[in-house]
Length: 260
Image 1: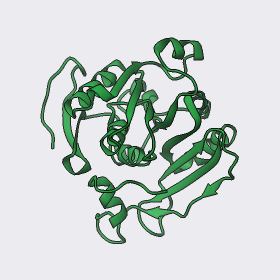
Image 2 (image 1 turned 180 degrees about the vertical axis):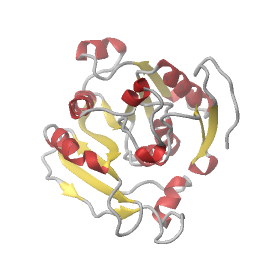
Image 3 (image 1 turned 90 degrees about the vertical axis):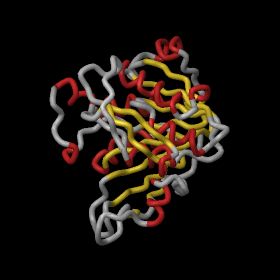
Image 4 (image 1 turned 135 degrees about the horizontal axis):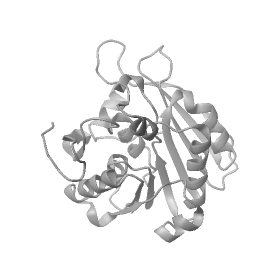
């Protein structure tokens, strides 16, 4: 569902209102450019049910964090986003979904120094769960219309490593760090995660049975010494048609969470 909503939050941009979790969550976001979708829902649904303090790195309009907040009533979240317009929309979405008192917003570049992050209100060794959906270019979504937007939707391996390093700094002991990314990013993600976490787990997601993985979820536990696990690949869709397999259909409809 969408409607035109001119606003100073995103100048010269049409916004849409999109329903998630079977209508339990409504998110306002730009019609063009990077848009929250299934990746954000999967990321939010992957948070451990016992999590109490969540940090969303590069939160965008807040979808992943709001999915986690909708599913875990005791959870509070801190959303960090460098783009002021996206951060403003994240605040709007938190309030519109009745979660404004559980969501703290911080405008910050994640490549900033530890001193700058601390001054902005990000404590070290604090969050029981940290999630991130780093920018990447997805040809299926079309070409970025400008160099600036292209930069916002792609990061090199060095910057990706910096994001993982930042997550490790702010995770509590025994806290989980979860990233969702394209399958092609698995090698640098594994290097970054295994240098800093134990119990690293990778879950490949396929469009359909027999097809190459298109997405990867990677989770690490701060301070753990448990070995790496590569889980069996899971197809999102049924073999024919566009229907999701029951496991993922339930997640996207808001009646189940990701068990991994």
